Amino acid sequence: MNRQTVTHPQKKNTNRVVAGVCIAFFGGMIGMAYAAVPLYAMFCQATGYGGTVKRATQQYADRVLDRDITIRFDANTAGVPWQFEPVARSVTIKIGETAQAHYSATNKFVRATTGRATFNVQPELAGSYFNKVECFCFTDTTLKPGETLDMPVVFYVDPDIVNAPELKDLKTITLSYTMFPVEKNENNKPVASSVPAEGTSNKVSHTERSLGG
Image: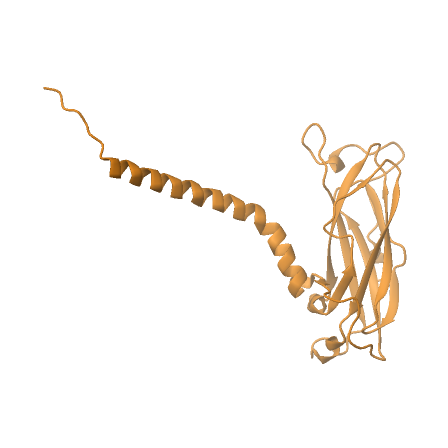
């Protein structure tokens, strides 16, 4: 006589619950992995961690000190075929004064390309006091072949920087941007890995050298 295996309905429901929990767990892990980078960027912008410039909650400081500080501007590319550089290499402002600087980007490739900039400041401890009001960072920017774009950044240095023992005598802060490629070509490789247009170059001088740093 053949025995028939009888599956209890409650056991089947339990198996379904376990399977559902496992799927949800793995889905959550994947979601966390994708969210890790933007969440880390948000954390750095909010705290100034690792030399990342803080996102200002107001356009002006509560006071302006009668003390100068020099802001040096640095530009780098990491694969994107652009000429990317600051319009002025430095500016001297009052601590607490809101100022505006400009970067320039020119696409040297034969077709439209997209870049995205990240940034930080040196020394790293100054990141907690360097507040950006307006910035082109973490924004995808597409340029047509040969197109040039003006990219402004508005910022101020928090007057509380003079109360930090490690920074009270600081005279210079360097704001550094690095531009990365975003688009990919038909071979699923970054656009910047392609050969540049004839007579052009992917190389952009590191402006920090020109600044004596």
